[in-house]
Length: 161
Image (cartoon, rainbow, N blue to C red; front, side):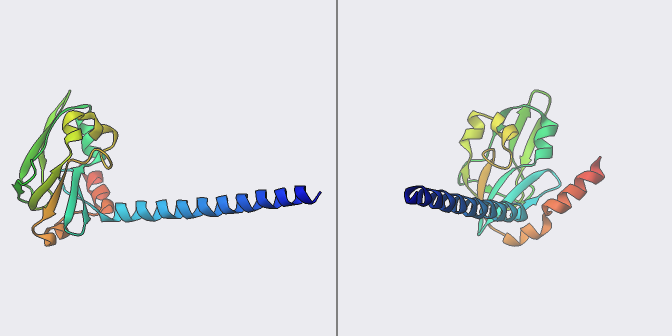
């Protein structure tokens, strides 16, 4: 009987720890997701940049990838290349259209996502995640004030339809 009581207590303790851990993990995911979305800024040409200090990660919006359709070719700027805000810096091609990529901010490219050049469809399946295009060291952080928050970008899209 005592052994059974000890086992039951251990099971309940395990359940309570698991539920607490689950809530903690959910809160961490929620905080991370909201922080990530709050930091993402958009251009009227449908590029986005996620700023972390002086480094920006750049990609195209979900609207852009859906408009293009299945992306089959991706050309990105090389590391070391200097870019200016709104300057053309790459190209994407799909089975139904081609589009230039524009830099949302000025700066020096520090990394390109070669995985997107090797597998362009990654942009379609994960445009805000693994389908990012390049990372840039910001030359003029104040340029981010000209970009739209996610909320403003969604309002912008609504006026375009």
